[in-house]
Amino acid sequence: MTGILTATAVVGVVGIFVGVFLGVAGIRFKVQVDEKEEAVLAALPGNNCGGCGYAGCSGLAAAIAKGEAPVNACPVGGEPVGKKIAEIMGVEAEASGRMVAFVACQGDCDKAGKDYDYYGIEDCRMMSFVPGGGPKSCNSGCLGFGTCVKVCPFDAIHVIDGVAVVDKEACKACGKCIAVCPKKLISLIPYDAKVAVACSSTDKGPVTMKACKAGCIGCGICVRNCPSQAVTVSEFHAAIDQEKCTGCGACAEKCPKKAIVGVE
Image 1 (cartoon, helix red, strand yellow):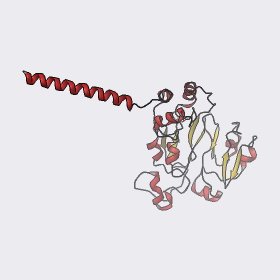
Image 2 (image 1 turned 120 degrees about the horizontal axis):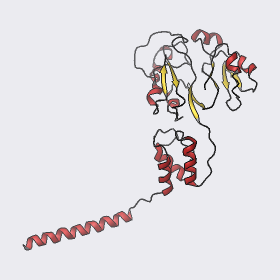
Image 3 (image 1 turned 90 degrees about the vertical axis):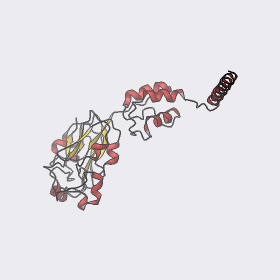
Image 4 (image 1 turned 45 degrees about the vertical axis):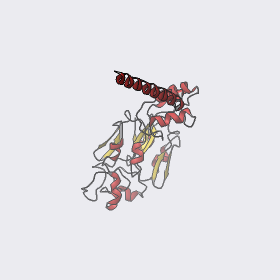
């Protein structure tokens, strides 16, 4: 009987000691939590896409709480989330227009020429190891193997008839497709943009026409017909300044190759 009582007492003392030790350790090594950081993290969408430039939403929340990132840095949450975080941080949120990804290519199976049939790994990044940088005649065009599709966390981009196409309603402008495209065909344009140049070729006109029926040949007709001087041509390639563009559509209407398209 005495042995049982002794064992019970020892266990009890050890339990008390462990409890006291854990309590003291918990107080001494307690990690201080920034309440604003926690509130910001709760306001973020939680996609952890990395489009903001940080390692997930927790990284961005910490940066915002420290004043190292703007309150509207989340491309997925956009302006609504930016305003909510601005209230948490007690600052004014700068106005930011919604952006969407755009693929500057129309070289589908009908319009783009093909030099050979390719059988191999369907990854656009692998094309740097094959002849001519891919089977299509245009070395600046979309390869159509869908590497951008595989990295999009929002199912906003699909390959249609050999060319990647963005669903602007589903796109959150995270930038993952932009980063992975080896041809650098994808960029962000304003959601409310009316027209865009759907070509990235900088080859001379005759070369472009031989490779693709819808390629920009740098003829300058778009420049001469733009009333707001929003279109320029450099290196046989047209570009539109979306800040100057009024969306009149004159450039798209006059383009002889239909390389400028409406994006509404």
